[in-house]
Image (tube, rainbow, N blue to C red):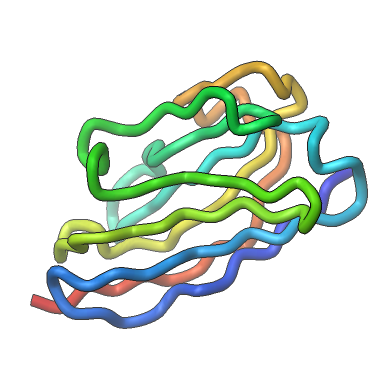
Length: 125
């Protein structure tokens, strides 16, 4: 079992930046691919970005490509999401997730095995 705890959310103006962190504990972090998802009020959870176990492959939703960057530090058991040029439509609760297939970089919600509790990101216009 892996425990995931997100941090770094908050309120930011349009065009601003935030960096989310997700700290993992419980199992060897490098055994997992990691992903970020988000859920806005009244909407389904949607894929944001994912990264394989060693950072060798990443994959982004079209809506964030070029603005968001996912990275990981296996020595610190942490995955990051750097968010730049934020827009009001990025407002959501952001969740990190772990996939037991460390080579996969999936945008599908169902392929992830463990989830954090989420951190709120609010972008004001």
